[in-house]
Image (cartoon, rainbow, N blue to C red):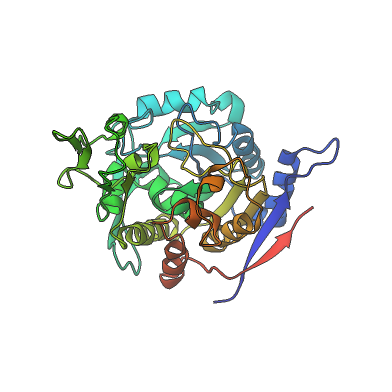
Length: 370
C-alpha cells in the first residue's frame, strides 16, 4: 500500500494568530474542502470528557470544525455513544449533562449534540464488517450510521487496555453502542494481584457489573462470569494491583476496535483530526486526569485514520518525557512511552490489524503546515 499523507501543525502561534486559525488552515491544506458537504448530515465523532477530567478537548476545536462544515453547506452535529461502565455518560440524560458541564453546548460549538445510541444505549444498528476476522458485524449507534459523512476529532492520549487512544479507538470503541462495547471487550478479563491489593474497595465504585468481590482476607477478586472486560478497574487502582495478564486479550480488543472502525467508515466520506496535547496516561473516560507525560506536540490530520494514529504515536515516542509525570515511576525498558506506562498492552496490534483488513496504512508522509 502506498504511503498516506498526514498533515501536521505545531502548537506555536504568532501574535495575532491563534491555534484555531492554524487548525482551520491545517484541515483545508489536508483537503477537507474536497469532501462533498452540501446538504449532508455530518457526524463529528468526539469524546465529551468524563466530568472531573480536564484533559479532554476544549469545545473550541469542535466549533472550528463545525463552522467549516457549515461554511461548506454541511449539517454538522457532535456525537458519542454511551459508556459501558459506571460514570456520568452511561445514558443519554447524564451524558448530555456531562457534555454541557464540560462546555459542549450549541452556544459554544455552533451545532447540536446527539447521543448516537439513544437514551439507554440500545438504539443501534447491526452493520456488516467487510473482511472482518473477529467480527462479522458491529453494533453501532444509529445516529452515527445515519450520517452521510463522518469526521473523527480526538484527543490523543494513553490507554490502560489498548496502549493509546487515537482515531481508531475514538471511532471503533466510541461508535459502538453499549452492546457493541461489550462485544469488543468480552475476550479479556483482568486479574487481581492479591499481594498488591490493600482492600480499599475503590475499584468497586467503577464496576457496572458487580464483578469485584471480597473474601475473608478482604482482598479483591474478579468474578469472570460477571466481568465484561471493560478494564475500568485497571485504570482506577492506585496500587497497580489489577492487570490483564492473558497476553492476547488486549490484542483482540485492538483488533476488534479496528474492525468496528472499518464498519463505521465503509462506504462514505471520512476525515480525521488528532490533537496531541495534554497527553495523559489514561483515557478521558476517567473522572480525573494524571499529568501529561510529554510536552504538547501539535495537531495532525489525514484521510487515513491508521496513518494518523501511527504518526501521532511516533511523535509522542520521539518527544522527551516530562519527569514529573508517571513515566518517572516506570521502568524504561521498552524505549516506548506508552508501553512503559502500560507494559501489558500492545498498541502495535491496532496498526497491524487495521492494515491487514484494509482500513489504512501505517506508512505515511508527514506534511508540515505552518
